Image 1 (cartoon, one colour):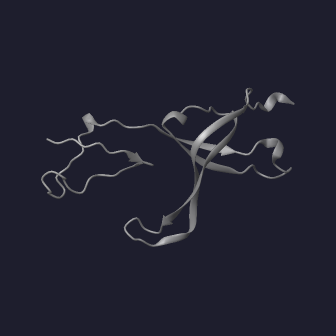
Image 2 (cartoon, rainbow, N blue to C red):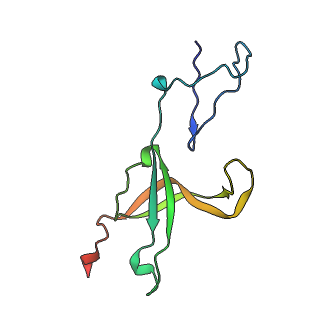
Image 3 (cartoon, helix red, strand yellow):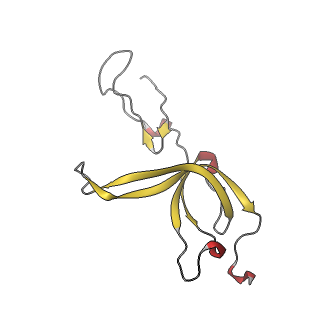
Length: 125
């Protein structure tokens, strides 16, 4: 039995196609009991209420945090973040390559910075 290390790259495991030693194709299988996995968290970011024009709904965007950034922020925290803005096409049917004209957008978090120690509270008025 031969072991090989692979990293999870944004939620996907780059499985090896063939063994470098014996040169056979598709001879590897994942043994989950020996695997080490990383954390991933989906966070919803919303505009602060005081920056939203009166009568409008605050804009939101989905964030994806990995490893050390998981559980760093809690609901109500005010933050600034550095990340990578991504747009991913939606498939019309999962078995086809055709994409819709609408894209899912999200941000891959690189780092968070808490801007205010206190959380947002509706009763601050």
